[in-house]
Image (cartoon, rainbow over all chains, first blue to last red; front, side):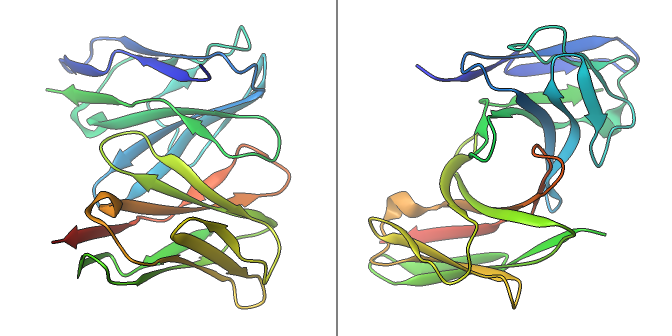
Length: 111
Length: 112
């Protein structure tokens, strides 16, 4: 089954404690992205990757890092999380001019 | 600045009604417009529109794009309670295939 898998689904952490949200896709897609979704602001792109070792900033990259060492994986790293990064995060992948497939989301709370 | 605006923000209708959701955009280097339905968590794909005036249809849902006036509409006829969701519009920019700009969504509630 074609899917994008994110882990964990829910995470509560404390300010400053580094964390990683993993994302993996099994469709051999070249393009992968991370979004955050906040009430009233919609989905905003954090980072995206067009292929292995090729990443670029989206609209709200501050406080986040990504890496793309393998085609299937695109982890999101928060080196020093802060409460304003409390949000619902989505990973998505797509191939060429097709729709984006989304993961099930990770609800992150930073206290 | 690239912008995608959806309206209305929210609406409540009775089962069986027809609804029209709007999406207008101002982006540089437009490539396509996508509609998604978001129920509990992950958005699920509905339509991708690239050409003006060509209606895409899937069951009771249909959508059309007007590239001259920079907007799209999503129609849902004979609404059902299962149509209750947030409907998201996103615009893709050329040159960077993974760049999607989303609107804030329209929350639709269908009541009995």
